[in-house]
Length: 245
Length: 270
Image (cartoon, rainbow over all chains, first blue to last red):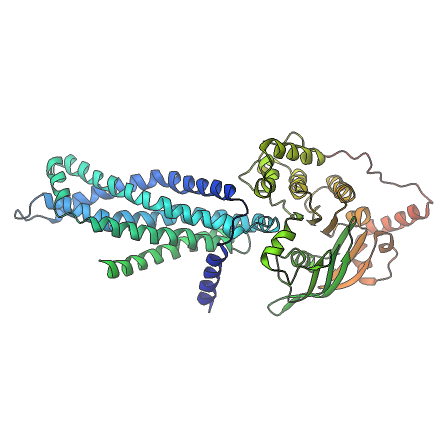
């Protein structure tokens, strides 16, 4: 029963976000602030994870491809496709669910508990539209950018690791990158990133916005937001892969 | 004027507000009093529309607020200022930005006009030099005064204060009470204060609505409350011996047998 109520409340929250802005300029400001918080705030962790994931992919792929019949450039192909198809969109979004999702849930939860959301409502401001919509739109704009950055840095990390460990030269790696490249993979990754961005922002906002109680409940809501977002991301990853690949 | 007619509100099986009616007039401080859990905050949240009553009506100057469409409600809400128990200031904004927020959202004034208005209301609540401070840097009393400044910045017709004195020392409480009284008279607004502070009741209670277990138990003014024969209200007001003595002192004051003991006329904000 609770899950049905939660889904209903979540859908009503999404519906409630769409209303005429009281002041477009203020909404734009809030949107830009959220872009900065989500984008700039996650840049460091996304960069570090991407570089190391790419590097580890190269080393582990080389470790498994022991046959002399397989050309070394295949390693670059495997790293490229793994990073583009899975690591960049899915892994980065799971990390973002932790970083951004918990921030959104705790920020809104704190606003709810300290009656700041009520204060907005009393002023005649649609708090869902002002607080949640800019976060979702900002996530939809910024998360795909972070995913593209993660693709680039992941492949670059793989190239660096291949060079550093004397597995394959930069030339061979670059040659492998261009072999059998399917541009659709990038589009597929971007579709996934839009889908995951919506999940991260909206699910976290839901748990934060409807928090009841005090500091303890904010913590619980934050954890719940991350866990549910991660599960939905993994489930969505499976569904989208089955449907679109 | 706000009219509350036969409001009922229940959460699950528990009825929190049971058939409460009241008339809150313009230009006076209307107090909702009662013990913790008596339904004061729920009633106030029903009046401002944060909770939807299960039955009954709320009228703002004769217009039914309960039956209004969302857009119409939004218009009424622009005429409402509210001071929350904890201040409900936006943590990430400075005092100036907090007070300017409603102006930014609802007016097309120039930055200078907005800043002038902010300074004017901050001065009105005696917080002239706090513009650049963040809420975390303010004391409880200062937060409440910033909350009042934000509530009155758009010249509201209705001011709601949810337990304005909770967590404050008696002297700061008096400052807040005095401010609420002055603003009510100065702007000729309908003020509704939710409190269980008996000092406030005596200082600003033009109209008092006493709730007991969600029901209206008594209504009257601060002049009448000390002479009430209602046992439940008497038990609530004079729960401490100190206040019992104060009742006698007050009666002596009222009869003119002794001079007024406390003078708040020259009270300075802390």
